[in-house]
Amino acid sequence: MVKVSNLGLALALASALTVAEMAVADTTVPQDIDEIEITDDSQTNQQLRQHPWIRYVRRFRAEHNFALVAGAARGSYVIESFGELQNTRIPSSAAWSKLQYSYHVPVFRGFGYLLGSSIGYHYAQRDPTRSFQPVPMVMFPGILAGVVLNLNPLWRTMVAADVYMARADGITYFDAIDPAKTEHISVTLVAYDSLFALDYFYDLNWGIRIEAHQRAVYYYRPTQQPGDSAVYPADAIFRLEDRWYGVGVVFHLL
View 1: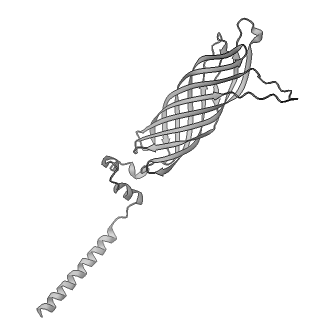
View 2: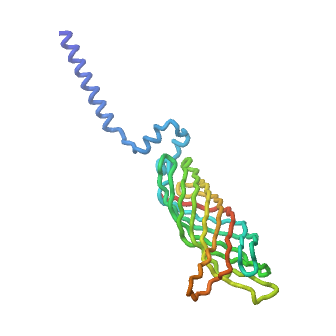
């Protein structure tokens, strides 16, 4: 009788434990897969794992990003031929501003790539006493591509290349001795711009951006074809080489 009683007590206790485990399992709150991955990553900094933004941005600030940046540029015009100027390098300084859109795609953890475009304005002050007088340029949308590394929800860096066209109306060669030799041309140039950017997000969506650029802008002279009656600025062969530095704001659309 004692053995039967003990056996019955053991079966009742086992049944009660099973019911309790099922109740606990049913009340467990399911976690997001990305959150589990981040929490279980032993290489992730403990402070980063506890950051309140991690549940929104994960390791990578993906998809839509906008940036508005302004700054100063310094470089030189390399003139092979324009008016009486031949093989001359003329210093140049300017102010600029750009509005950029980029779409960010993650590849592995915080690393990914971006595609986008930009528009901008390049302001160069005209000096009427100089033989070469540059003018402001309008920078049209082109192709922006690069790689991006999200260090954590606060810091991000990127390296990219931007290829676009720019319009300059009224570039002037001024001849102080013989004004009749003064020339004015309006041309479309092609720009090849490499850039480095560092972003710091002080808010979930908003951040501060620092940019550095190295750029070359070429004027490709049209080729005169036989029987072509069009008038081209045949003597104008030049390019602009400059470096930009700027600061602005960046917005990540979540």
